[in-house]
Image (cartoon, rainbow, N blue to C red; front, side):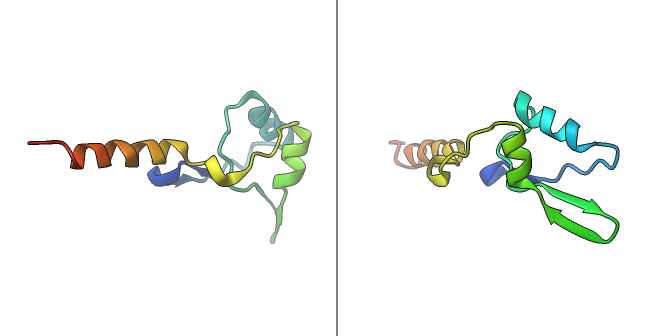
Length: 85
């Protein structure tokens, strides 16, 4: 699940994608702003977010500044609201 902030979320579901492919995409930066990664095998679901992130050697970033783009959009909207007409 990829989180785009105020623009929403996107679930990437591809049964042909292997774990190795997901790790490669995380490492290359193709997948960013990842909320979670679930592995579905049969009827069971496992949260493998930490495992994949550690395999991809991506450092965990504090979530405080994770939504910078949305904050920028809010700031620009506030500036437009207070413009003189």
